[in-house]
Length: 342
Image (cartoon, rainbow, N blue to C red; front, top):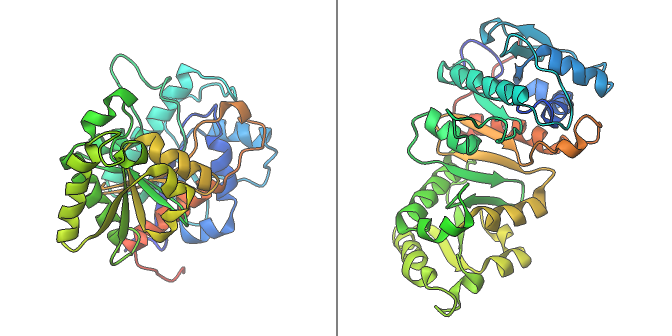
């Protein structure tokens, strides 16, 4: 891949054009640091981006429309139209047409990833409601990409400067969590986290904290026995192999005393247990990274934010961090070598 160009190509699927995805993407790409490191290609429709260029009064935002990545220009922001006609852009309003564009953008980017035409994908936020149909049950980007690349297991890994949190169970109802906190699931996610911290983040001997499932990590069995019967034996197994895995820790006290700073990664048992503290600590700079995939995928850690769409108040920090994190992972995986820009 690295013989044909001097910067890695990072694709950005635009997500829901009626949310803040276009705004944070455009603002992030105006950062000169990003264009020096990567060549961006936006999967969207030129009319939608032109709408926001005018709406946000971003006259200095320029892009070049191309038919495919084969026509990419490495000194410009590139854009591929993923549908023939752009749907009407109505900031803050959920429409079926916007959902179709979001899915088309994601699918086009996946095909280019599979063909080796782009080095990474950054996914802007979309709305699951207007993507789901009778033919498609779309649970989330993580699950969709895991299936698209025929990967058995992946890890939703939220990362920022001082905190990295992965989760054992993802987008499932709260009532189903306990039955999915199994030794095999915990082992799988721990292995994915350990490998990712080494390969994607360059940490030779990562230290991981494992959280308990129950309040106070079960209080020695008084408040639940999953810690004793399921979680502790897995931790012992990893320790016996020389892995630096510790716990289980009560989640409230762990984050309350900022113990995440002592570890390279934290494995939470379920979605909100890990994501609420993460977003409380790093909402404006956090990145959602999918560990375990053969490709590099990152995303800002926020949603479509319909309530502020088109108002020029969305903070692009998380999108900028997602693009920069994708670049770092590309380099840490050894998929890229710096070349002189001729």
